[in-house]
Length: 332
Image 1 (cartoon, rainbow, N blue to C red):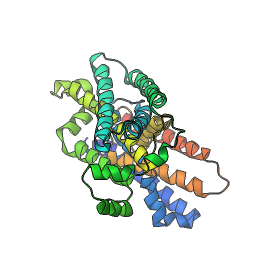
Image 2 (cartoon, helix red, strand yellow; image 1 turned 90 degrees about the horizontal axis):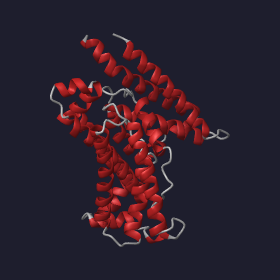
Image 3 (cartoon, helix red, strand yellow; image 1 turned 30 degrees about the vertical axis):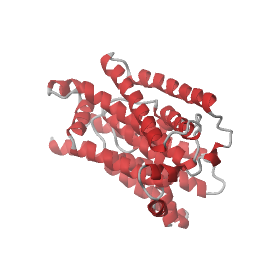
Image 4 (cartoon, rainbow, N blue to C red; image 1 turned 90 degrees about the vertical axis):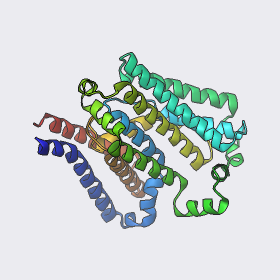
């Protein structure tokens, strides 16, 4: 029985790794430049926002839930940060902390409603998506139009943020040369999530609730605080993604990150995390995002191919992995 349990846990992750390697090798054979270091480095830097949101989504799906508000929360955080710094002249460090706290608060409130009122996560987070997106457009209209030349006014935003946190210009220059700031933040978020899920009691509680909430409660797992924390982490990751968006593009956009919630769910599922919860890992999520990056980059490099093929290929993979999950769940 233990062997079967290990197969159920490791099987989807192993298949995801094989698919990821096969896609990378196939793309490199068709496009020799695909193996260059610049292309590999671009996987992470160009998909840092995606990875951060997917990391937060992993916690939610592992617990047996879903979060449809992450894209709107990221957009709201992005425009809020730009407005606070550009129009309200806030210290960048305080503005970032305020935006992150707002994302955590939104997620925590949704988690509290889901647990205390026994509401479906789909409905609660759908409402959160509408609220966050509407708030983003409200902030934009009242504070600054995204069509105004605010790009130039906050062009030095990353340097000012680093100085606000006590990092001198020389160190900031070296960090930016070695690895883009967005990539550093994405890697840090991934490593923090990996440690939380694999090495802490909270991580074990998340897996227990996802496996069977009633059994977890009988074993003394604090279901209420765990669920609230899970959605708070997802909201915090979404807000962090909005911060990274602003730091990378030097602007905020209330209409950005549409479909990001669906992409992140797809990446988590392709990464081997069961939609029913209880089985999966953030390592699989990283592989899922990498598969997205490989497909998207290869299609961009191929002349004559429409970018819509990215959705078609990812949708096919998603259905295949869902069928695989169903087969693994039915096995005894």
